[in-house]
Length: 232
Figure (cartoon, rainbow, N blue to C red):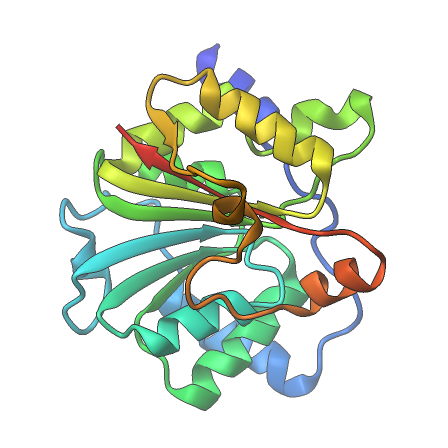
């Protein structure tokens, strides 16, 4: 009974799966490159996640819902000593990232194209150095708040896979979701907000690449918050 109930509870964190028709090259990359980079959740996860990558990595970061992939590809290119796991169910976004990975010959990224909770449940305990949840769907209507990815259940998942001292980084331009996240993390014993002054959450994360979504939000008069929580 437990497993079916959890599946129903986690399948609605994201909306549509596909947008406009893919170009021929994008379709080919989905068919040929994605299977090479996709995590195989049917196999047990390696105890040491560095085994997922062809060259040695010192850290592992998980990005949930990478959208257009600007942040993920930027981080992977600037820090080849870190292994990145990117999760994105939207096919067009996945295709866009695959094109960048191929063009820039990035080899420290692994991918999953479905529900991020499946990856979180597959990962070994205390195996990830950082979880990034950047501009997630805010599900603004109150009746849809249960679909927000930040929840007690998912914070439990983060706490299980993060190493002691690991980071959960959250960014959003939606005030209600920022407050929602602050409250949920405040009430969770495993997480401590690292901010000491307003500049700590108003200033983008170190090395942050501005994304098109963020630029659009600013044009529309919305400012962003950048929250960092440390795993106890």
